[in-house]
Image (cartoon, rainbow, N blue to C red; front, side):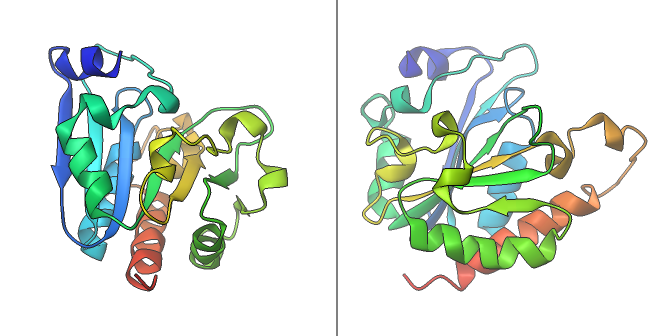
Length: 198
């Protein structure tokens, strides 16, 4: 299934190897909007590695994380072999969680570290680093989830639309830069990445 997505016309698979800290956004492009922009910008600013799958505007094909298989993608396999830890950026939309950033994944020390930078950057948001506060289906703990495949696993961050700049609240934002909340999010992620001991 993942191989079929990668072979679909217009789908772009991107991989850049830099440091051993990684960022991923394999539900990027039109599927979970702005996740690839956030992850790739944070990676570039931090000198970190990046892997993303960007879907074109006419496609919204959701592949569950447990089926995002490095066996079907040499670039993903190379990325996962290169990095020690990774942060996967996802987008979600759920009633009651309009201002909640949910940090799942198996590297709980990294989740706490990220929270230390995200909270002051986004004081109006609830940065949830305790797994009990994350809905079970969004915790990203499965052994086949790519966020858990690097040597020290990683953190899955679920972002609501507003902080990604993809909410109707930003309908009149004409840039040219990203919306301020998204810029602050990217800067916090990059700073957290550069200060994480590899």
